[in-house]
Length: 415
Image (cartoon, rainbow, N blue to C red; front, side, top):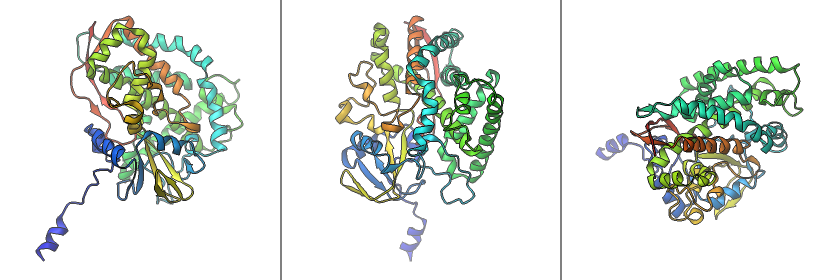
């Protein structure tokens, strides 16, 4: 009887290799369990998590294999995150987006927005990005503590999104607000927050539908809404698919670049020898951009669903199984990046091999733009001989999808 009573009150056991636990990212303690996974079980089955059972794919090679077989490992069958907001809810609002579609719909819709991210468009946008970056940096206080996330990272990326959408400038911070609600997969665990999320996302859809209607009868322009309006693949989208694709572009354009810009300040301060190396040789900036993206990995995972029974690194995957491709771990795979993979090395020879943008047909459509923005930020900082000194612990995002920062206290000095 005593044993039964003891068992009844025992806390549920926590799987130490369940790397979907939000506290690992809030407390920045995710490295050790991923190191174990890479060494002991690169493809590991987690039977019980707050997101249900899933396979953890934690090393470089099997992540690339899963990404390279989009018909076998579907984006559409269950979505692209461990959280499935529609799972088990017949009344759930479905918001299809092209990153979570399979061929041929994915191909056609991606092709619609891809012209916004061509090399020629990057050339066209670069002067505007440089002007805005210089403007933001020139307003920063020297020798005083401020929040780098809000003052620099959010301001630069939200402004860039406003330009891409030709979005009303005075309302640009709405984009950050909607992005934060859309990208927080922890909300699935709380029904009240789920409903609040829907309210905010429908506000987003209503606002953008007004912009869409304003551009229906106007000539095609280079902004993303105009591209959708004038495309065969996307002009007939219903409201939910329209909203889904907006969310994709907002979160993709905001959270990823914003958290890399914050990681830039934090990582270069943490590895001061690398900051000194970069300050002494600005020609390292292009490579440093890739390395900072690899080191930060702003989206920790993407999810796929098996469409048939298969095998992955000796593990039997069943049709319908959920797989999490942990980019944050693949980018630290010692067999690819060496034993110093957890460090930020600005002249790392193979930094461009990182998986932070994904691989294959779903590789981030805006990768060039992200690299351009981060590169220009480093160049403009170098022009001003601006050193960012972290003055306290960052406040981190408590989630296993967006890997980033809420706040980062810093102070500027000259070098």
